[in-house]
Length: 78
Image (cartoon, rainbow, N blue to C red; front, side):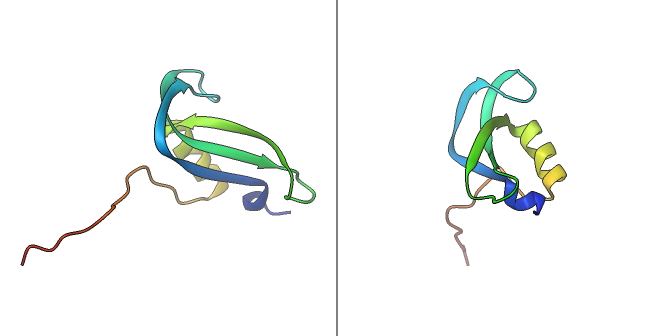
């Protein structure tokens, strides 16, 4: 079983202000780490809500490219 399938890191559409499940500090929560069953990767076992720093660290551990900034629309002024 691949680590990427068992651990999936997802961005929230809107940040939430609460305690990070990893570092226990109260800050904006950007990510949710979904933890799936190691054998099948089909059933959800649990999840962690992570702040920006912990989310980036978990992205490095799982080798997942993540970002907190999104471009909704680009304009060209030519």
